[in-house]
Length: 41
Image 1: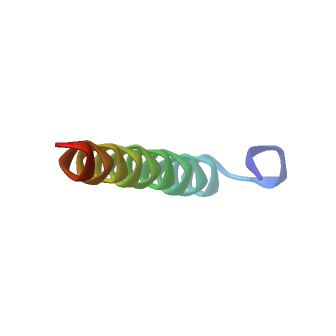
Image 2 (image 1 turned 180 degrees about the vertical axis):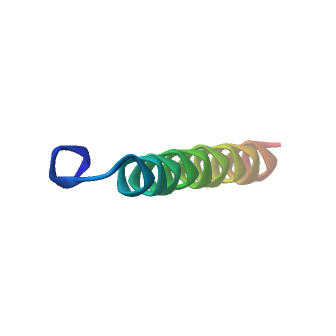
């Protein structure tokens, strides 16, 4: 994805998308972990 970006603006936008997706995945993983811990307790 990043390699296809031609301008600095495109590069920045794609980088922001990637980091935002990474943060969402991290949050979702933390929520799943909390829910599973709650079931155990």
